[in-house]
Amino acid sequence: MYLTQEEESVLEGEQGPTLQKAMEIITALGEIYGADSLVPVTSTQIAGVSYKTIGDAGLEWISDLDGEVVVPSILNPAGMDLERWQEMGIDASFAAKQLEIIKAYRRLGIRCECTCTPYHIDKTLASFGDHLAWSESSAVSYANSVIGARTNREGGPSALAAALIGKTANYGYHLDENRVPVITVQVECKLKGADYGALGYLAGASIGSDVPIFKLISQPSKTNLKALGAAMAASGAVALYHIHGVTPEADQYESPDNTLIIERSEIDDIFKQVCENGPDLVALGCPHYSIEELERLSRLLDGKTLNKEVWVCTSRAIKRSNPDVIRNIEANGVKVFTDTCMVVSPATERFNCTLTDSGKALKYIPNLCGVRTQLAHMHDCLKGGDVD
Ligand code: F3S
Image (cartoon, rainbow, N blue to C red):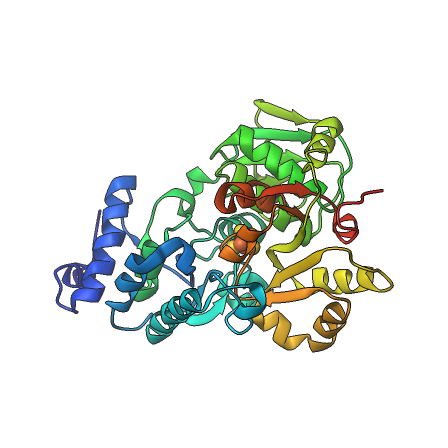
């Protein structure tokens, strides 16, 4: 892999041990995946924030680093709402460790908005054609597919390394040849709301890590695209997809003959997987809800009586800038949590069954929290599982 003189000097430790370590991580990945050079990145999104997932070893690693990031960098969700963790049922020792992790990241100049939807809060972080180093799989999918930016699914350490160096290795989805679809997914029914999460859940499990191109009857919104990509990245490892007439790179490609057909009955079956005794938590906001989704939730809540605990996760920036919407949601008994989510927080683990409108949460809550989960549309979630 070609390195400039400046990059070589960083690798040799001439700019200190933190940058040397960061450069070692980036060049090691570049060598493994056959990169020809490094490429500058516009922004980074760094996973490995929840104390539940990184533990003391992760905290120690981040705390030992010094220096400052050189490109705009933002964090993935943490293990708790950084202010309202007691309401989530988080214990004080976990909270203390979590706050130490945030402090260690802040010391490196990272913006401590903890969200998997950075594109909802700052449009300058990713534009068409930008190279990025983002970590969280749904954010990676959205950046590649919906925005047309270019990022691999970075691990926490490699995204942090890219933040410190301002570059990543030029391989994978940074290259044109790896963005070409290799399978067509033909969906033979109209879709709405959580159908897109169910579709992603089904398609991802079949596709694995390939790049699909979809033929859809319905015209998806950006919210639908977020849900589809998140679920495909969870049940499979799809980091980039195209949809003819919808996503920005799709129309330069033909549909491959290799075709996966998905029918209405398969999507309906995903909604039929229910817990025996019904859900005891409704968990919305995976990925973090946008203001449009919060406004819809707020409208749906008016006049409803909730019969379950309901959480909705969003970013602190969206909560901060939309106080009236949040006030109305909370006045109706819903807890709006920021900085965290139902998967990376240990708080979900005390429940028996969650109800969600997310195909990604449907996959991850059972796997990562050990809690059974069922899927429903947003309006049905508010009925606590009593679906009409
Ligand atoms: Fe985001 Fe957590 Fe879901 S990080 S995509 S809300 S699992």
